[in-house]
Image (tube, rainbow, N blue to C red):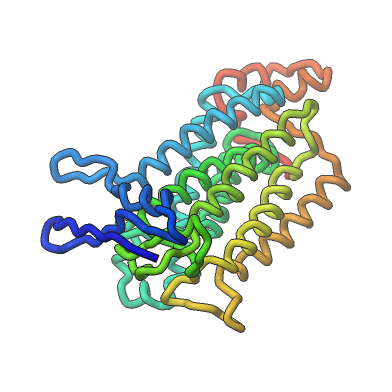
Length: 330
């Protein structure tokens, strides 16, 4: 294996970049692509805009469009204000939960000694499982405000969530973080500038982008295409099961977080541990959806119209705004 290196000075330090990697007598295009990428998308004066932040922004926008499209297909009667309330609640939940999840699950006591760094999102450190829990809390708040069943909103969010995983993992690749174990496969990438050493490694970020992002998105969209829609809880259950399986499989080629390492036997990682309850919850949700067969329900007035019930005066008053603070059934 031959490696050609280039050093570029930036600010006060020297940044090492891998421009060409020859594996098995061929130039590695993927590694060359990584070397040409800059984590900073652009700068405005002293402000640096990073691809990671843009990935979050793009993910929320596209996810909102998917939710809107599916909600219309399911005839849930969501209006723009409903969508805005839902997306904002979930976005806050994802960001706050993702950060707190990282602090609790992956911090290994560091943030007990440096509590002020908990709010330093620019330093990185987000947990998917924490973000999922935060999204659930945000979704529950939105369900109460809108009067829509929580599981209906959770199903809508589950259909769109793979977009965030797709963009997020690509941003992880651009940042040169969460890389995998050394490999001699032709698509191995050298992450020397972010601590990966001179050996090509599994681009585990892209594996996750493919499975947890693209593949899972296709599965969810195909399932969501049917009308009447599948029972309440089906989509959240499918998402939890498939994500847990994909994540556990990729953990075998991904290097665990340095501050934690392997938890047991040289193979068990924190990501695997956190996926176990996720898998169990997904299976329970699928059983629940199949057993109860609760229909997807939207705004109360719209649901009554679709069920053939006359619309009450109070329902009519709710048409222009929220659902009067009613609670949705799970």
